[in-house]
Structure formats: structure tokens, C-alpha cells
Length: 368
Image 1 (tube, rainbow, N blue to C red):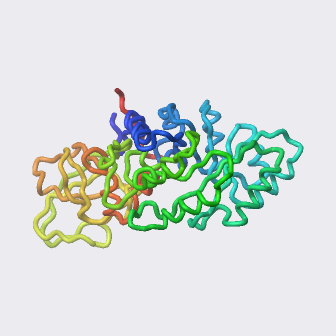
Image 2: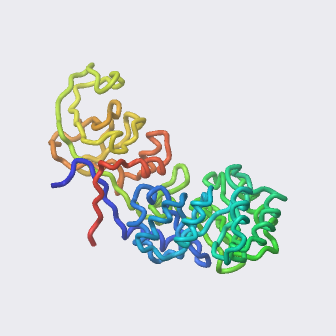
Image 3: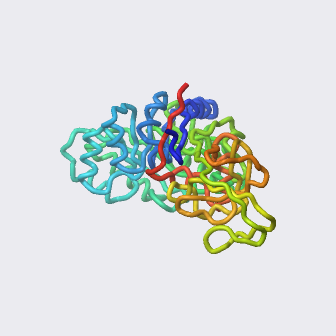
């Protein structure tokens, strides 16, 4: 039986998108970002599909451990690194690479000075994100301290993160690139700077970091078929959506002009309305703040959302579909309805929608 609400995953699409990354950054190694359960797509599922990636990036130690226990053998970088000795020991046990971004992490490493070099690290420079990483002379001092740590494999790798790369009119990205390259000049080690927005929107980023074939790009959102840029979709860059969200009509009824629909009566029918009720809501991950007028595909045709999104249901105007009946198929986003478009109607970003699918939604993989 087909579930009421389900996600359809096309893993061929994620492999296609990886090939597109290689087309945009042909001389770089690829660190596929699969944190947050691979942006809601399933971390081990996506890691196995991306067996041609050179490595993976996750946010937290437990994500990396999960991948190792699933048999994933590529390099795995933990972007938040470790915050205590117990996490460091887990990283050593499972062969995970650590991003170093605080002096306290180096203190922990120095306390294990008798160990044989066993940990690969990425030293993070804060070039303007003002979140994690070292600035200026603190970066140089951190590099010197790490170089003296017996437990750290040499050379030390170097990494930074863009703050505004999704805004192609903001020159902050160029300043970050210049600062990164000027500071690390003469330092050995591999480098990583470009996320999805950097890869797609700032071609000079790849050139700036291609001093050796060992440099890494870190695609995230584009692997899942989405654009990081406002007003663009993944299709504009040759990407294919991996996730589509589906449900079905469960009721059809007539509502008279002047009546309201849903909680708080925020929608009032201007004419007699053929109303459809769909089994999907914020309890499934369909964003509560999606506004009336947002498109929904019923039988492959667009109809507008009306009224508030509730926990288990939404309502749509079916006046354009007089023959729609309970049981008819519905697509909330996917082919023909980009998730980027729905994100705009919800005043959010596609990351939020992809990561927001809840546990009660069944995952169905495409069969090819």
C-alpha cells in the first residue's frame, strides 16, 4: 500500500550531480557534504551512492562514527572537530579527520604528546564568517602549535568557509579568497575553500585554490539538486532533484463563497470553491509558514494552497480540476515543482525543507 505521505529518492540523480561537481571543478578532489543526515536524504544511503567521491564531510563526531560502522572507507572530515578527549579518542578509533578551530582543541592534542602521529587535521581560518576558526596571527600561532604536536599528521591541511558566496553581487567572497591565499602562502598541506555557491558562482575560487590537484571542494546543497542562489533552481546548473515529496487527496468538498478555510479563518473563499484536502502537514515536514497561493501539483497540474498548513493536512483550491477525487496523487515538491520555489513561498531556504522531513514520512527509493 502506498503511504499517505512519502519521499521519493532518486539516487541516480545524486550521482549525476556529483558528475556535475566534477565538471565545474575538474582538477579538485571532492569532499561531499553529507551532514544533517545528508540534508534529510539519509546519510549512509547517500554515502554509498556517492562511492566516487574522494571523501565526505559531516558536522559531528557521531555522524562520522555512523559512517565508519556502515563500512564507508573514504576520508571523513568532522567539520566541528572534537570538544573533549572522549571525542578525540573516537576520532582516532574510527580514523576520522578533525577540523581544528579553537585553542582548546590544540590543548587536548598536546596532552597526548606521546602518541604516534595518527590524526589528520584541517586548520580552520576565519576569513570573515566570524563563526569558527582562527584569525590573523592567531592562525599562524595555531599552525605552529599543531606542527609541534606528535599526534598530528603532517603537513597540516588548511580550510576556510564563505559567508556570502550565495550573493554574487557581494565582493566579500573575493576578500575572503584573497585573505586565505595571502595568509597560507608558503604553507604546505591541502586546501579547501569552495562550497556549492563557491563552485557554481565563483569560478575564480577554484582557480585560486588549484595550486595542486590535492585541493578539495566541498559541495553540499548542489549534490541534492538545488541551487544556493535566490531566484535560481538546480536545473539552471544542470542539476537534478534527488528528493520529491508526495501525498494524496483524502477529501474533496464544496465550500460556499464567503466561508473561511482552516485555522483562524485566514483564507476566505471569494467564490464558490471546490476544496481538496491533502494528507500532509508540518508534522511531516511541509513548512507551516508556506503561504496561501503556493503551488501544489494535483494529478500533475498546479493548484494553489489555501488556508494555513496544519499538522497533518493542507487544503487546496480545486476549481481548475473539477474531476479531482480522493486518492489522486499529489506532489509537494520535486519534478515540475522545484523545492526552491516552495521555499520562497515559505520565506525560507531549500535546506530547511529538505532537512525538515520527519520520521513518519516513508522513504521510497527509485528503482532503475
